[in-house]
Amino acid sequence: MWLTFTLESLRRKALILVWIGELWNIFEAAVALWSAWIASSVALLAFGLDSLIELFAGGVLIWRFQREASDESSAEKKALRLVGVTFFMLSVFIIFQSTTTLLGYFSQPQESFTGVFVTISSAVLMTILFVFKKNIASQLGSRALRAEAYESLVCDIQDLIVLAGLGLNIVLGWWWADPLMALALVPLLIKEGIEAFRDEEP
Image (cartoon, rainbow, N blue to C red; front, side, top):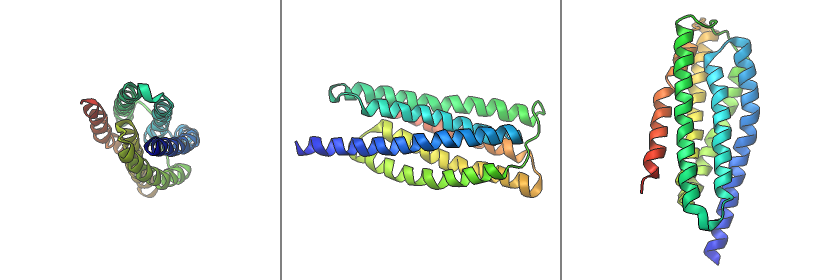
């Protein structure tokens, strides 16, 4: 009974953390996509779309933790697989958008101070969420929550990369740093996608 109570408490904490991330990602996606449209920024566009993908991943986790205990193993596997797919989806988009921008098919990215603000704010929050999610994932033994926690970490790393691209564009006028920094995210995203499917195996 005590163990059941503890597991339920951990699930509630996991849900609270995921919902915090969901609410932030709604705000983050709106600001990032608006800033991307204004500044023609590939990095901010990828950042905003990643926020939408994280919304989907968070929704998967909410679904997973609301499943009945009898269906827990099946829900865990489905959640882990779906979270893994989101990494590959974003990788494909970034490669396409960044490459076409570098080749001149899209407008050169402009500076965006709003983008700088939202990426710094996101970096702080995603770091906090990652630490707490990873801790609860370890206690629950949830590979799906662990994968989603690492998606928060990738988002944090992405924040720093996007910030570097935006900063170089603002300070030095290097517009190409924007799509180039976005491409630098792809190996991280693919690695996490592969890890999610690898962790699914017994």
